[in-house]
Image (cartoon, rainbow, N blue to C red; front, side, top):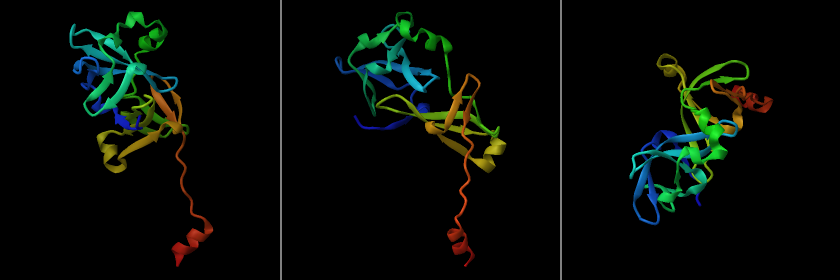
Length: 177
């Protein structure tokens, strides 16, 4: 399976396709994120048959293709009450979008406005934050790799303080000439 990052922003409304029937069986509504490891445990899916919102476990996704999420068939969609192992995570109803992003030192980097996950393992790899419109004009948005994340809570994400690159004496001398 190829490694590919997919933006969450483009995921709601994505079709869930049955390999058995060759057609769509539902569409993605939103993710079920484990805040402890930023793993997407599953997806809420609106079932085409019943219009009920069911759950598609990430382990049941065979492939993520341009047309949608490929699964074996309709039987992989499950009611939340049947997923005992995920009960706590489902109850948390954790959402990254809108969480504040702060550094260890207290610098505020705005709020999460999108994130990217790997389609082969469903781990969130990058988080994108932006500040208010006024601040955004001067500072733009920030891309945060999962390795920079120190803590995730229901209210904020704490990241490492960015390090500033300092020039070596040889580089400084080269600039002076």
